[in-house]
Length: 161
Image 1 (tube, rainbow, N blue to C red):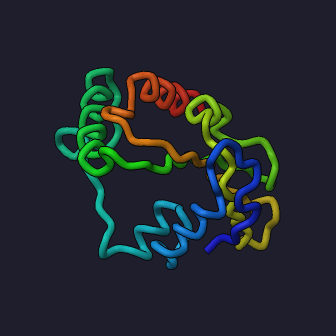
Image 2: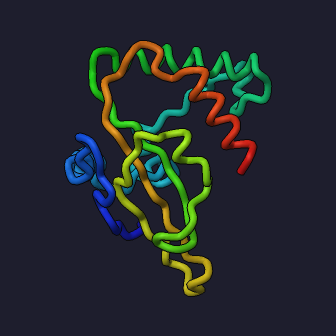
């Protein structure tokens, strides 16, 4: 498991990184907020939703993006209507405070404050060490919170990086 460094740095607004870290530790003590590690640590709770016909994983056309956006919003509206949610985005770098990829992460999640950085330093070659930077904010869930604008930002970021 990667080391946790820099928890709560760069917080702004009413986001409390220490509170989110404590909540994470309480609910998911077996691992950090990294999808592939959670899948292994919590296989009894892991679920993947196939959002496109034929279990296709990634949309390639505008029509497929519209399907994914509609299905994600439908699911998330059912789960979170009337509650506050944490929105978390991720960036990576080769140095703890180095240039991050994707470089457009701030455009996708401008409200995000640096929650924590996870160091991946298991490899004996220091040039292969990497860092995962998690950004978060807390906000009320509103109906259809994922928008076409968010989807467009994500599509552009995914294809540009």
